[in-house]
Length: 317
Image (cartoon, rainbow, N blue to C red; front, side):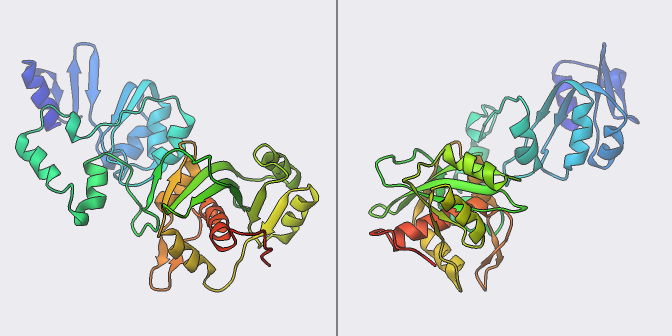
């Protein structure tokens, strides 16, 4: 509100004539501007209507349920701003399902930033202790979940010159997740391209979905926990090998993948989400959190097969 009143002063508005201090509103001719504090958000969201809504720092203590109440009662436009510290309900639930314009801006786009402030920000650019901070507050890029395992990835083009295998994580209540993977061992790069991420697929639907992306001559490295689905896929004439699982397989796979750069395609939205949120549940025992790991698992199956059995089609039991 203090910033808003500076704007009004700049335009020579007599604040005493337009402000209702009790209601935190400002009447400017036929426009009513209302400020709503976080503590009022839940109650106000269910009652009032408006043409335009603006959320400042929408990722700070604004719940998804409160946002939806305001969103449904706003007739023209909703604006939000946030520093992209990590994935949250806006990036997971709202942006994928709404028509929107995304504006990516950083301190470099601010002509009113003082040289002192600019120098303070840039002084952290090459300091490894502030790498995560500068990623968010300097470059305006999505940050990583605390304890995130994979920070060695970026979005880029898939190297089509390399041989490909497919990784498949088979879901029951979780989604079926399929991707294609290529590995450049010389340059230590893993390429990944998300192809399928869908819940509640029957075996017949899964076969149909896979057939859109995989030829019968291609090789699929699949989650070995569901042998029946693997048998069904083989009956549908897909070449499927169960991934190797056992004591230490997850830890060893992750450790090996951390020695590579991971390049994912632009369309791999669910994989990007998982990579940002795949974190250690217990770093001492090297145990990752279960949940955001379906495509990460599929990638690990394919990568480990390619780097362990690259010269043959050895079956893994």
